Length: 366
Ligand code: MRU
Image (tube, rainbow, N blue to C red; front, side):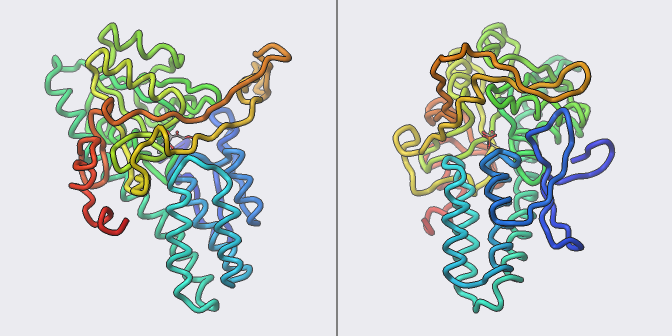
């Protein structure tokens, strides 16, 4: 997608420097900073500190991390070490394990001297496939938005609500939940997007920045506004992303997603989840009891980050000194609250049969 007229992906390989470049998302939307990752420690830090974030982007970053490890030492021991080291960076998004498994599985079958080149090709493939998957998700989601637009008076915008950032910054390009939005906007449909701010890390600010850069009308709202907006008929459709979806269709996403799904159900608003197939964990049935929920540091909750009038980025304490702080980063929305799943192969019910119908090959391989 474009930033100030220039096309970017959320990460890219600089062949001249022989290194991965990332957008350090900690500073967005206030400052656009690019960082080069030179060591495996750099990769792990980038994921842990959420310089890169979003399930598909974490997976793609890890794939390039494996390529770096193989360039330094292509032995079996190095491959296993890299797998474990990167796997422990963040626990919830399954794309991380998916990418690491895919790379290790393919590389193990090769002689060590062939691994460095093959690992880099694999990382490029993971990144490029993510872009194509998201484009396809956009096509399927666009049809949902068209159907709603067709039922509205001419020129009235379709009003969507999204939570967190499931945009191009959270993937390699286009995003998952935002891909249908971008395609609908580009097709000339009138839209308005309610963007939840998504405390504590304010990923909604990233979504608002993305939508603004693409010219999509939107409003940045507090996390608690969604129920009220739905109750007053201000939301036609909710689309969110996911960090891990079970084979039964339970959806684990950024903390607060579950509350939006409850409000949507109570108000008859369709609640869709956009996901690439690498986000499906075929080994897990029940999301609430089986998905590990990341507990992040209390500083993210006790403080807020922002920019002052002089353009200086800083943090301010909001919680009283001495209060204990809790920071679960994700929650699980049970499948019964999900109207449908928008995947690269089409839209399906959030049920075992719905997912198996679209992905019989993956069910068989699991
Ligand atoms: O903690 P984050 O910012 O990595 O969480 C990101 C989300 O929860 C996204 O909504 C999710 O990864 C879907 S992104 C396509």
